[in-house]
Image (cartoon, rainbow, N blue to C red):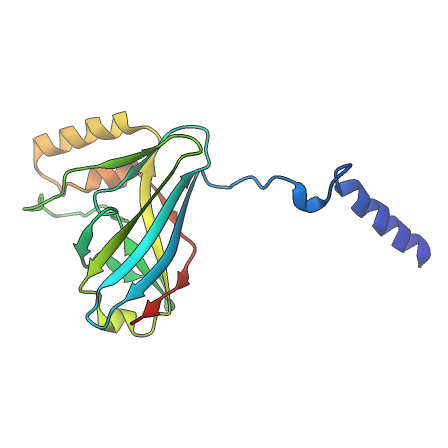
Length: 187
């Protein structure tokens, strides 16, 4: 019994760096972009307000699609699961068998150099009471890319052709990053 305990202690000691503890080991991020929701409040009239933060933990510049991230929008909130509302700042899928939208915002990006951060607030109006009544948490999804030039060429080609929804080139080139869900407060 004692030899097993000593063996376990020595094995654990080998995992700890000299002169430090295991807690001092650097944590490597698994994703280059981290999205965080700091707070989220839903009013009785269906207006969802939240504060967000983005951080580039990668080693190259990230271009975050921000046309719907920096402003107020109607809808653009859906169900992530039975407990969580999802704040959309981009489309999750291409819109098939559709024509270009009558009104479409100018494509904007937040460019984040390695180590850089950005933050802001957004609002979503007309949040469905049916969708929000049973959901206690909220999460944010953002679209980003590391190379904007191929996207811009695809977008220009799509706009010239004028036969598809303007968000489709964004969907084709973006990677999605979801924030960890937080508690949704209600007023």
